Length: 261
Image (cartoon, rainbow, N blue to C red; front, side):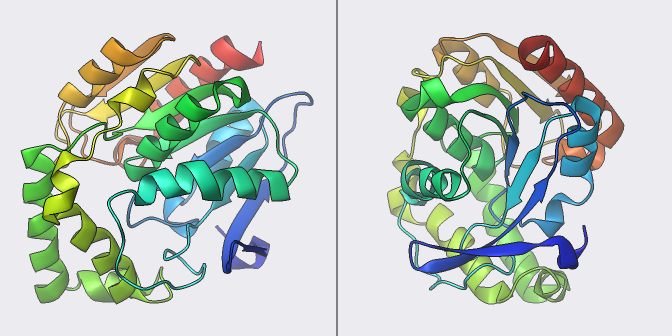
């Protein structure tokens, strides 16, 4: 993804980097991509462009404040940071860019943000494509996040992250600290999922080290709309990276069936 194509917008006291991909079919809602906890515009790599091309939908990809090369923020975050993004930042960004109805594509934390937004604004969401969303905190998640802290401090992970974030330390610890804080243990968005009426495609790998299929079970039990599942073998926490062709093909076919026809 070329940095030259990125734009910036002043929003709620921060500068947000974003990329818009034009659609090749008229009348379709944009797909808004919401990245994982340590993600950014660039770290989505080719997935947004590929899905936009396959569906004909326009796309919006942005880095949340504290990630990528959006504004650097202090590492301290509150347990409600995903609620803040879904209920304050995302609505403001969509309004500033003149975007109405959307399809939300969210990965991990981004999937959770998508569910919160869709529960609060059901009239604006035409569908959701979610990869490994979190609805509640699992022991597996906390164990893996604690292990990642060790990796960050003892391996080349810090250096690799520095290529993709303005301040890798603040990005990493801002996310890692809040997930490992005692206050986060009771975090739960099942009540928001229960207000989601748009159709959902949820994708998860059987080797996901940050969540189990219990997250999908909870979503299917709570959501008002249809929930289609794609469970992939030999796949970890990032299906669009581990199994790109099947995720792009399945997501595009699902959007075409549910939204674009």
